[in-house]
Length: 182
Image 1: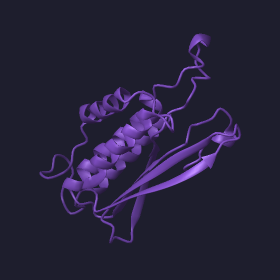
Image 2 (image 1 turned 90 degrees about the vertical axis):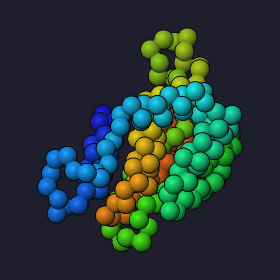
Image 3 (image 1 turned 180 degrees about the vertical axis):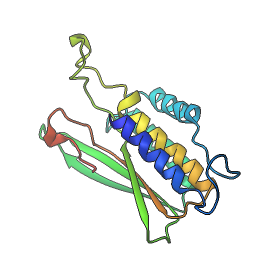
């Protein structure tokens, strides 16, 4: 369901990138969301391995995202620490890319980019202690936003667009250790 909501939000955003004075249909200069490009961005993230805070995959993902989002007129990374209920100290980073920052009318799209340290809800009990690969949970929403960043850099939107990638959203296993970066 969350993936469907992200797709609807992406399509609405792309529709907002057109000139309302132009007829609908195929319009020269209108950005087109490329599902294959987004899928390639998912594959790149999964290749980093699990993106659990504190792991090499997490650090590599952050560096890669910052490079890709450098096309934004405003790019900010907010680093912070969180101590979990289990006593782990997590170093987390939220990333904000702003397009048309001078516009007062704005839309915010967000996704989390981290992955869970355990697959505690896996149907196979043997997998429950392993990290979540995060192709759909973590990478898919991030891929949509990264591809939108490419489109927004090439086609200035008529309203401000903020893309927020939050960290620590899905650390778990209980609700008290979720939504840490949101």
